Length: 408
Image (cartoon, rainbow, N blue to C red; front, side, top):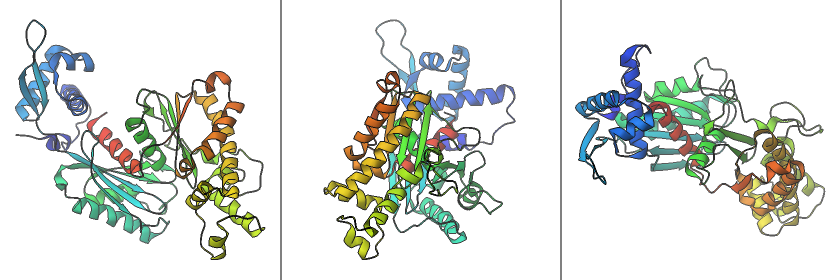
């Protein structure tokens, strides 16, 4: 008997001939059964647009290999009763790992995207140093070894990291750029598994699109308002990458005529006014000037003020925190107007730290978007806050490595 693990671990052919074509169709058959469950030959023919004789032969091959089972006849209103088929062995798994600025999150998922294992490490701090790179590799290797899943049944590892990422090359262009070997190559060498390296915002965007309430939408913009600003873009149900995978760096559009230097080295970027880091800097500057806030004691103790502290203060009716969050929402709304005028999405999803501010952020954002966008576009665009948990980024990249391996 063969298995799904054996099937997907088979070496790729040269991409030519009937054998290669049939292998692709078999993968599509398996993907369909993995996603939607049991089915008949007629249903496979209709959905995959393959002739009945070809489907019949390839399903028979999969049955002979022990990958697919003939589950017998299914009842119908009349006529001949067709046989129904399903996967014999679906025990293959995928790992998703999120490398954030101040934590790492690890998940194990199955073919149906169910999370079976989740671990979070809040002691991790991301930095562009060799020691941090080694820790990422060691942590990933340790999680695979201790997650409780047979290593031979884990077909791939999706890893996402903040900043600019080229998934095809497997490289981060913000962290660990001095090494000749890509981050993906290093992780594959350490784990012995296939690895996908992805941008964190795109990974979360895909999780929002797949598991959130926007499944009926084909064009979605995910706006991540964390300590930085970035977007994920879904066009016709697919993630949009651009030429080198750098699409979505919306925070570095020069919206403002100011002299503030952005982390990218340029001046006037959107991030310099509306990001979590920008709001943190603004409130510290105002406290130094004597403006009153309930965060003054924290500042006087020389403790860092995080955007989450400012959001908590706003919820506690701190006027300065409320004003800064509303100001960021208004400025962001003007930028979102540009986005929806350009892409005309069905839905804009807002996530990240500032999503937790709720109406303090969303009301001025929507008001400004309405003011500066075309009315025909605005009235057809839905806005909603992310309802997904912190594991969404790791979950999303696990889905993406699954799709890559089974050919979705």
